[in-house]
Amino acid sequence: MRTKLFLLLTALFFTTTTFSQEESKTMLIMKGGETTHEIPVSAIDSMIFYQPKMNIDFVEINGIKWATRNVGDSATFVTNSEDYGDYYTWDEAQSVCPSGWRLPTRYELDSIAMRYEQKQFLPNENVASEWLTTENGIKGRQFTDITTGNSIFLPAAGSSYDGMLDDVGMYGNYWSSTESDTPDAYYRLGFRSSGANVYDNHKSNGQSVRCVLK
Image 1 (tube, rainbow, N blue to C red):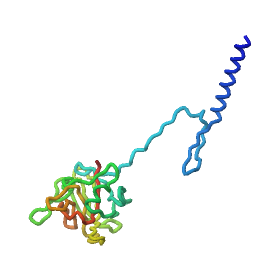
Image 2 (cartoon, rainbow, N blue to C red):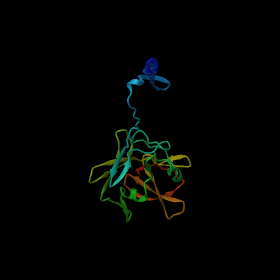
Image 3 (cartoon, one colour):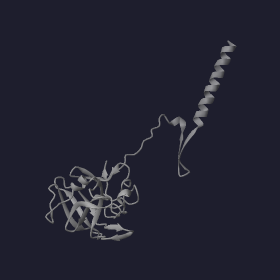
Image 4 (cartoon, rainbow, N blue to C red):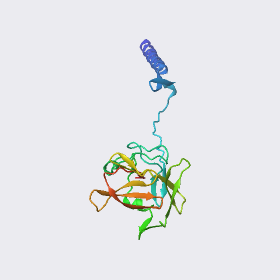
């Protein structure tokens, strides 16, 4: 009888001790080296960690999901749709789109461009395009899906040649991923006040990048 009573008291002691130790444990939630919250472990019955969904900023035009802003520093978008962003050679442009994005192909650029025949620009049947100046004085072209009304603005950022900027506010030049038949040349979307079409350019020139969603 004494043995059973001793064992019962011993078990009760260790159970109470263990419970007291757990009761005294506290989880600390910290940010920047400082504690923001203290929560008793006994008050927690589950923990869930999640990654917020990426806020993908795109506009679908003629079946293609376009980013609404140019690429600035490598793998980042600029803050505003009117910002020119950085200038990249064709080789550099292959890896500057942020994760989940890529360079458009020639045919994707064709999907928003105008046709150029007999030395004149002809309308795109699915996408309207107009030259405009924003409220902040930035010139460029706006491309609008005729069916949905969705639109994007591409600033006329010009180009970079040997480190010197040229035609800023007059022309826009945006790389595609498609190689031209001409050696060392790749297709790009080029536009000015009179129209927009796709043609090739030397891959060493610095041009703008507008990504499409993968």
